[in-house]
Length: 428
Image: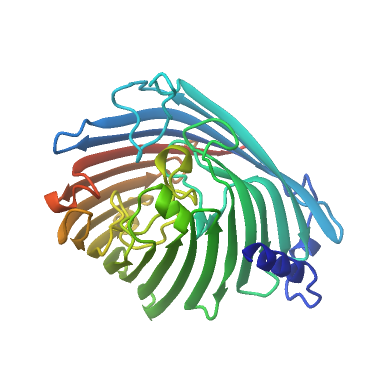
């Protein structure tokens, strides 16, 4: 049914006659609007697990090249997007690699992680007015299908996506993807996805208020819905209060539940965050709650072939309390207190610091109830403001996660350190 809805909406988008916007009319040409960018990334993640679990770490150097052409001029514009990815394994440790949550280099049949990775992809795109249809290899960033770019290499998906911005403030998306490229493996279909259909949109009602609704259907796995409401209350010229609500509802397919030995098939999870900004300071208070009968809690991301997971992108968790832990267990309730500081006011533009404390309780597993977990998150980030290294960023992040014995089936205690150095280069 979702396929039919997507087809009907796509037809409506492309046949709209009273457009309020026309990006294609502003096209300068295929070459004139083209861009080529290269991101050099050096990334390291170390997880010092507790309770007898072996420590894990991976380290690599990546080059991520992306090309985006402009659109040819005329009523219907045509263009091309392409990317090329390469990663070099700088650690190459059989014992320390292989953690599901790090996943820089997938282990082969021999048990050894890959020495390096290389892959690429391309897509053709068409634009009519302010509606774009893209077919091929893409990196979608939607609340129900969001590619993971928080490790060494990004994920990508192969399929069709239609995005329409015909009405000011309104974005509509409809798509179908049939292959998933795992971030740690070569090949266009290394993730095991059969297909995923996505549908939804967002609307900027006023300068202060924005809302979104999206849905997805992962073939033979689950159906998912998402809702968001975001409101910014201006207080003074350098003060504001932002309320951000996010919620997901997932329903697992009966066959998937049976094949994977899952208990229950339903989950609802939501978060409400309030962030007060005054000058260089930000203060956040958030609550997140998971309900339903599925022992997976809120399920997302991963790779179906060898992880028994969902396949809808490693960043498909637009929720407040997601750091190392996602605080998404069955029945879990969690609170966050966070603080951020922008050092620009103190004469160091480009430097920022964030700290958060999150505590979750009421966790249910197959053997216990009332489990808890808590995390302390810290992050420094610096972006070079000028000179030859302009836009180079250094991100130092750490988390201390402690999980009670009652919650050990769901999560594991540990200390995590991440070091990312990103250097974006605009070729043209």
